[in-house]
Image (cartoon, rainbow, N blue to C red; front, top):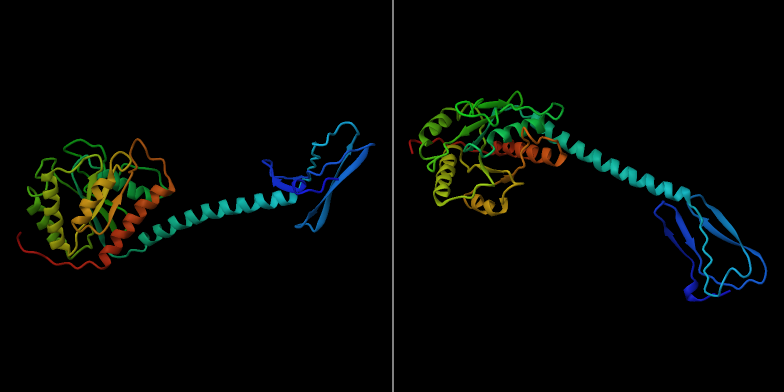
Length: 304
């Protein structure tokens, strides 16, 4: 027998989930013999033996005698561990979504999440997506009237999420001066509602539209006015992140004082196949809005 370093016995796991035990010991046979390989199966605490007949003249000095010992219990144990890990991962994801949905359900304060944005920037679709993610047992529905044409494109103005939470839109004009031309009407309304509802504000902008100098000035004015009404700058929601360049827009909104900048791939009438990752993004957004109002200080302002 050739007992060299090159003849060490090895074992590997094959694609079928069984162990191959390979011995590279070589020997020249002068007569037919039976060669056996014995493997110690530790999980079962027993030996497994496999034998084969070797006939003289069929082997060469370089021939390797390969013997397979099928350790089926070991393979089944490994497969069971992998299956448990997959089940645990999926269960954890479902439990995590349920926990976030429950936090929204437990909100007992009257809260109006106000989404501010121009037409075609995904405000109605964002509302639909939030409701769809929260009401996971219900099919997708166009509750916010997405893709409606004027004069009905801004209706309904408010969509209920829970008994205490509504999501309200404030659609601005498509023109360049989309905020300063309407600011007085909105500010008067928000002042009157200041004592009746907690109102987290969110500015919504599409990633497909880059910001002009005029648009940046308008947004800056809007952010400062909202801060005067609520005590803090609004959050920012960037929609259509799958079509635009959110990374190029985020620094600008952070520089204006927006504490949170969210990016969304909205569910739409054409594309609303539910995924856990997308649901989680909308649930995180709604929970952040609720938490923001817990520390919000309302400071009413006089005429700007």
